[in-house]
Length: 119
Length: 108
Image (cartoon, rainbow over all chains, first blue to last red; front, side, top):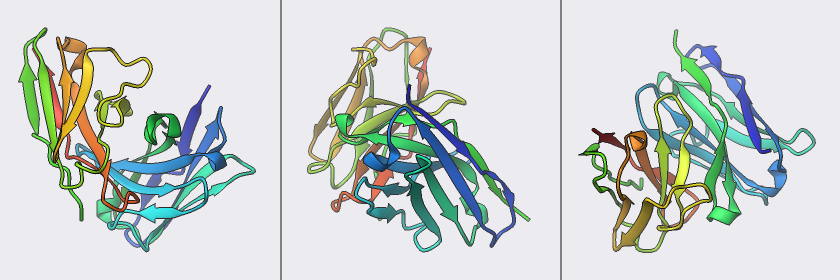
């Protein structure tokens, strides 16, 4: 059974850093496209970043230069390192598996982890 | 930056057909996807590659795309279909993804 479990969210001050983790089971992260998607309270979905199976990474303009997506193949875990955090980064962050069978649509999502940026 | 535009809300009575549109300049060349998000839950993929349904998605959900507009159609909408619906696609480079602003579907 495929499962994605995020962790690492919490309260952080503006300018601070946080690292989110997404532990995967039932499939291999390194063989998959994996994304982070966020949702500010009461707002819509916003794509944040993707890492392809070959290792290429891409970011939304809103986080480029501040966030870094990565993976640990030995732990089958996806990460999102978030630096220079701003109040507008406050959101629930979801990790997703982007399935080749569905033309890389996200067929599995984690439960989300809440990041709050506030002083 | 690339944008996808959806109507904020759509309302239908049970059994009617609901149509939700999504417009974007790259849609003639890029696939549209649709996600359903019910209150307090993670999104669910309901349409990929403009018109295909993942396994387990009811047949009343269908999709189409023509020119710069993609459409999600729910034929015979049910009360349980009440949710926020988001279209999703990529810019011309295919490496930057984007969601539409979301459409709240009310069925009552």
